[in-house]
Length: 101
Image (cartoon, rainbow, N blue to C red; front, side):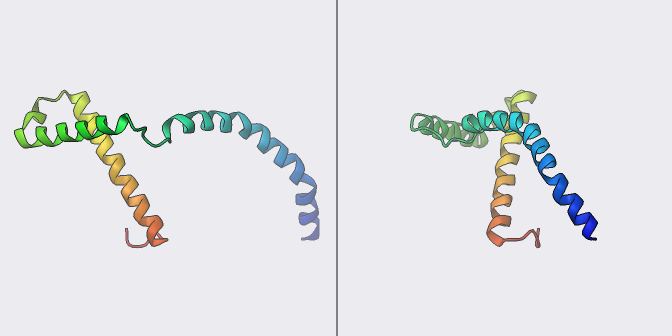
């Protein structure tokens, strides 16, 4: 057991250096995407989002959603699914556990 601990302590710096070398370019890429994708909406984007939501509601009332292309319907479905999943993730975080889902 003592030999195992000594080996782990001796190899730890090399493993940490290898992990840092492996992760550094990936973290740079992650931060580039995070700066673009994870920012809150800017003030000019909020009215556009509200208009888009009004357009979706009116198309649901009038039935014009039946005229969407398959690509548009698929994209709308993916956005709705993403919103639902973020809701569930928030619920799980709020409950501090996945039990019950």
